[in-house]
Length: 123
Image (cartoon, rainbow, N blue to C red):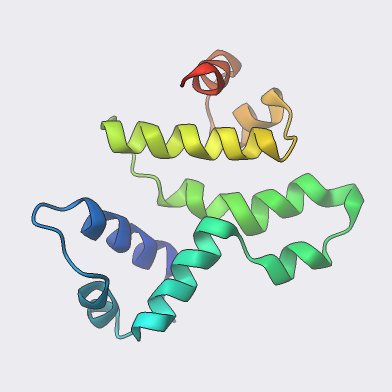
């Protein structure tokens, strides 16, 4: 079975590599078709829509985290490069747009509240 997070990380690295690698080279590396690669990328970037639809309203935030944001968060590298910080900021802003409380965002991404507030105020 293919680890979707590893595929997504390779895709992100390929996009930011100098010189840029093609998506097809990443797909070939993992033995996927180009369509299969883009399906994985879309599922991680936009969430697993079919699973999100099945969730009840009472567990909405848990479902959104599990099927939309968790894979994106796990794919963020552990370095302090500008691209990594931008990915984390985008994730935090998207979670805030889906009405996650600041405290909940901080707990899920493993940062303190002041860091989350700082990322929300950026740009």
